[in-house]
Length: 588
Image (cartoon, rainbow, N blue to C red; front, top):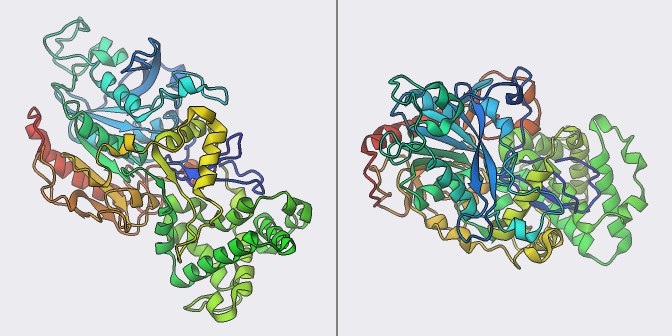
């Protein structure tokens, strides 16, 4: 997941999840808004002591590595790599469940203080660990953070990239879970103090694999939001003998190459006058830039570039330095995409916190007139609406918002969506309510993939490798699915209301243990009213300096605490019903 746009060497910009979802460099460059499911990376709190200077221990969220095969299936290589994870055993008692929080497509280290140590709030994984006397684990995905089978950069080869795929990454976790000790039987990894009846032995504190928590004897429960939510549902379907239950938040389980639906969710949340003007201005700009009048095209690009360079209060100092030469150097997609700047932070903040201010400035012409119900275009024409739109962009200084980029994450996730997931968030000129430029086309997305990875990438994302788990029609047992009403990724989730989806309905009626929802028109879960992406994996209770800008939002709602407590409460009720049946492996 992420509405800041990180840049790759090829000027690929990833919006999102995903996340998702950057370095706000010169926006005159051509850009493609690619799918990022991950959230922005939070900075470490100042009081957090780096584990590099501490003794690894499970007591406080210690950092550990496990040696994992690069290839689990085809013996194409005998190489192994070290996959990173963290363990917090604060609440663990023998027999307690294992709760795993999956970090997905990002460096997991910045999440540690917030999710396993609960700085400034609470996390679902730790609240569950306390309630059920469980162990909490933070798991890092291969090809991200420090879990690198190969160095990730522009020189990473196709032969190396082939090991970054859905199945290899899922099997990493299964290998990991099955590496833990059984309480009886095989004693190969036994600890000399393992008979200690209390919590952990000294050996177990420094080597978690000695803990008697093998999934054949201990329920493992997987939590994830966004792409990790996809993984949560897949693991329950794929390996029910390992993953007993899961919470999949904002999980776009249906992989589609064409994801023109992404911005439909944002448009639905707009006030009707703002929507009408945004749609008309987008069409106006696209028409002009697609036309043959070069004078009109250059003038429009110049005005768009100046609007982006403008500052609040009518400050045009930077804008005055932009010339026609700059306009001539700007691609059509680069210019038209400026209209989408206000959407940069929608995914996590929603309409009221990220777009309402823009819409108010637009519809009141920067508070110099009263807003009208039908919008400016309907009342005064497109040119007046276009001028008002440019002024609104100038008054909101998106360029000043900081962001910490991670080129490893950017490139690895790009490989994943180019090779398997798609999620190309194109503009749909046939959609009469589109607020996204049509210059963001499927061909443009695919061309960026081809330019970055060459012949190593398939001709089109192989979404069938993802959708084999059921996509919109999946119906796993022991899984809670949660979504935000206006989450752009809801369109690819079980709660999708798109025309080509089955339009299933969430129900809070808890299914029986190991039993799928009997009516495939429903699924166990809920949709949070007015919420957006992954609003429920953590709650911020005490604001700190790391939560004062857009770049630190991830896996929680910055605008509401309610989804966290609502979702957590429902999942706890479900676990209260399901956990007593652990050991019965049948699924229905």
